[in-house]
Structure formats: C-alpha cells, structure tokens
Length: 158
Length: 414
Ligand SMILES: Cc1cc2nc3c(=O)[nH]c(=O)nc-3n(C[C@H](O)[C@H](O)[C@H](O)COP(=O)(O)OP(=O)(O)OC[C@H]3O[C@@H](n4cnc5c(N)ncnc54)[C@H](O)[C@@H]3O)c2cc1C
Ligand code: SF4
Image 1 (cartoon, rainbow over the protein chains, first blue to last red):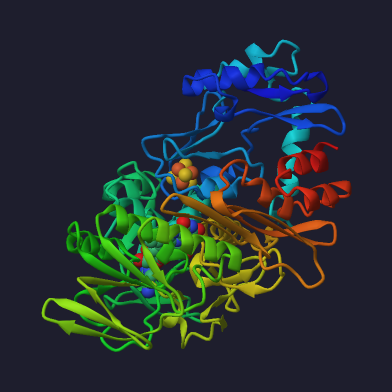
Image 2: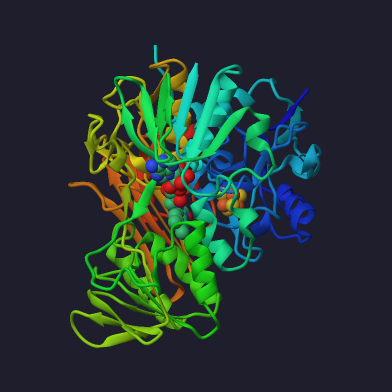
C-alpha cells in the first residue's frame, strides 16, 4: 500500500520543526531555506500552511525533464531527481504548477520532496500531527490531488 | 494499427511511449534524420560546458530502451507525404505506409541574409554535430562572436564563457531576449553580462562576415568590425515542414496547423512540438511556441488522439521559459507583456538584480516576468493555468507581488 503525506493545516502552529528536519535529512544543515517542505504564514488570518509536493499523477516535472533525470520510485510513488543525471536546466521548476520543485544554486541541481524514501522526516518531526504519513487513499489527500485536475491543460472530451 | 512518427526529439519520443502504453500490440516506428540515438537539444549547453558527455543528452538513458518497448527507430529523412495514399517517401528512396502519422520534425535555425554565413568557421548551435564543431573550435582564449541574444543565444552564452571563449554578443534588437523578457528584464540582463565581462551590443546589425586568413571579421552595419575565430548564429528558428509543401496539409507560420486534438487538416495526420502551430492557452490563438514543455505536452495529447480520435482535448499550452545567463535566472510566463486595460504589479531591486512583474486581466493572473527568483517559481504556472479569481489577493499581490504562494494557497484551499 502506497502512502502519502497528509497535511492538516488547521493543526499547524508554525513551529517549523518540519522544515528543520527536512533540511537536516536532505542537506545536512538545520536551515529552513533548504527545506523541501515550506510552511507559509498568513499574517492576516493567523494561519500556517505546510506545503510540499503531492507526488501528483500528472508528474509535470518528470514529463518536462529533457534528460530523464526524474523517475518514479515504484515503492513509494515519489518522483525522485537523480542528481547525477540532472543538468540543472530548471525546466521542471517552471513546469510544476504547484511550485514544489526548486533550483538550488549551490549544487546547480534541483530539489524536491522524495518522501525520504518512504520514511518522511517532516511527519516524524511534527509535534501536532499536522503532517502525517498515511495510506494514499485516505480522505483529504484527494483534495490536494483535485488541484492537479484544475491545472490540467488536457481534458478528456465527451 | 501502424503508427509512424517523423522525428526523434522529445515530441517523437513521448508520443511513441504514450502510444505504446495505450496500444500494447500496435506497430510503432520513429524516424529521425540525425545519426544519433534520440537526444535532447536542450542538454547541449551542458555538453558544451563539459558537465555531461553525449550520453547525458540522450532522452532515454537505458540501452535498448526503444527496442525493449518494440519501438522501431530508423535514421531516415522524410521527403514527402502522400496524404491520400497514406504514405511517406523517404530520402533513401523507400516509402513507408501508415495508419496514423505524427509529424514531430521540430525546427531548424533560420539563416539570416548575411553574406559570408556559409563559411567553415560559422555555425549554428542546434544539433549534437554543431556542438562537436563548437567544442573543437573553442580553445581557451578563442574569440567567439555570437549573433543573436535571444532565448537560445542566451542559453548557450554561459556555456561558451565557461568553455573559455572570449565572447562578443551582437543583438539586432534593442534589448536581450526581446521575445521573452520585458524591457526592464532585458536591460538588467545586459548590465549583468557586462559586469561578468561579456559585452552584449544591442541594435547591432551584422552586414557581412569576411574571412581573414583563418579568422573572421564580423562587419556591423554601423560601426566597427569584430574579430572572431568562430561565429555562432542563433537568430531564431523555423519549423521543419518544408517536406509537406506539396502535400496539401495546411501550414500556418510555416508550421503544421493543428486543432485542439493535435490533428492537421489531413486525415490521420497529427503534429506535435516545434513543428506544430498549436493553441496558446493564454491568447486562445494558434502559434508556434518552440519550447520543450510544449513539445511533450503536444506529444502526449497527439498520441491519445492517434489512439482514439477526439479522446483528449488540448486546452492550449502556457508559454513558459526559464533562462540562466551566467548565474542570473530569468523566467517568463503567458502574457508577460500584459493585456490592454490589465493591471501590473512590479517590484525592482536593481542593485541585487531582482525583479518581478505580474500581469493581470481583471482578477486573474495572466502572465509574468521574473529575474533572480528560483523558489516556488512554478506556482506562476499554477495560478495562470488554474485561471483562479484572486479576490482580495489581487490587492495583496498589487501591494507585494512576492506573495504568490500565499495567493495560490488561498485560492486553492480557501
Ligand atoms: C541549445 C538549445 C537550448 C535549448 N534550451 C531550451 C530550454 O531551456 N527550454 C526550452 O523549453 N526549450 C529549449 N530549447 C528548445 C527545445 O530543444 C525544443 O523546443 C525541443 O527540442 C522541441 O522538440 P521537438 O521534438 O519538437 O523537436 P526536435 O527536438 O527539434 O526534434 C526533431 C526531430 O526530427 C528529426 N527530423 C527533422 N526533420 C526530419 C525529416 N524530414 N525526416 C525525419 N526526421 C526529421 C530531427 O532529426 C529530430 O530527431 C533549446 C534548444 C537548443 C538548440
Ligand atoms: S533541472 Fe534537472 S531534473 Fe529538472 S528538468 Fe532540468 S535536468 Fe531535469
């Protein structure tokens, strides 16, 4: 059974533990700026919204990559960037309509959430269960997937 | 079913793969007229920089990838199509029949009317063969003149500098990348290049290229001549549709005019990628975008309709570009020039080379230009393609255009 990150923004307190855990796991530093999950702050509304790649079916990033550097991990369902193959052209960063593939100027490659190979650190670090790692067809996640449909530029006729 | 695909670039390859998934037992043949495995032109700048080898440019890395999927690949040039007989005549003299045909022959650099362009030290930068020629010619310190500071010119600019060339860039327009960046972006980019030691001359029209022994003199219409060991011409591209001239297939802007199903005017003949004049998402009009994301999108949709006609409709491709010019990253989306009566929200930090300009049509985002931005940039596509009504976030974006992610989250999670 594949699992997905399920985000319940109402539970988020904005403590940024997820960003810390992510950057440490993936970049070896406690630096939210290098995190693949981002918590967005809504000052007016006093709300926090953690946000990262939904590993969408469309996989815009994967389709756009000119050198086949992004592939799907069949075990986790995550789209993963191969650092060795990526040339840093950034086409995936503009093709992803969710803004979840980012260019890292230090490495000259792109970074995106890869579900930590099936054991996501952000979910483990979150003290309020705003981020959980659950069965893919559990409720709520479909809502995020539905956005993908909204931005899909091919629609089935009939 | 017998599917024939002309062209082995990203469009051809994605169409072949998609067709194979849809039709496990169909016959699929893909022709390319370059003697290489299917590769990506986009990867050429990284080859010039020696960051990858030729294998690194291949669209699919696994050996026998196509054979394993029973996709027949041939090095052959299509010369003409008989749409009534459903047959393609090849340069080798042979002919191939098809049930469904996909034209994915891409584009070729145009040859501007400059005397002396056909000399050995003058080249384009379009194919792997061109890249080999450039690599061989660039010794550290070699003087290179790049004609054209458009999208392709700027993309290879950095590669040429890092390969050790002493580069001069000549652009006939009044700014860099005039078809992708607004005047502010173009001006900043030029300033950036100057700071990095690369002279970009704008309003510079080349009159002739003259040989001087083993070197060249690039003569401008106004002003001095520039000396060069190698001249690279990057002045735009045109669709490879000449072989369809006498076929009766409707061409527009020199490309194959397709409808929302990627179908041409001829039965069972589809087109995708740089060779297709297809629907633009933002304007609703038909144009040739000649970019990689559009090529693969076209291909996927064309393949679905080759499998079952009118099964998938194209909403139009969002124009998008990203450019890295010696470390300064620029991007453009959709109607980046803005629309009549629409608002714009701009933020400029000249000293840090940072800039963003959002273009609205009423409450909707329809286009953008950015400079120096790398984080969450794709959300611009999400906002444009989702056609979200921004409501109160429009005013917030007018105040601070950097709050894009917040605007998107509010629009989608509300
Ligand atoms: C240096 C460089 C950098 C680029 N960078 C970017 C970038 O950063 N972003 C971006 O979006 N785009 C970029 N592009 C453009 C991008 O490469 C093209 O949009 C893309 O390759 C289009 O794919 P295509 O499959 O339609 O055509 P092509 O890739 O041109 O493939 C066409 C295929 O058709 C074959 N062919 C042509 N004529 C015939 C014939 N008569 N018979 C049989 N076969 C034929 C060719 O051999 C080739 O295999 C760049 C291009 C270059 C050259
Ligand atoms: S930046 Fe890397 S992963 Fe993204 S499209 Fe380019 S090569 Fe592929």
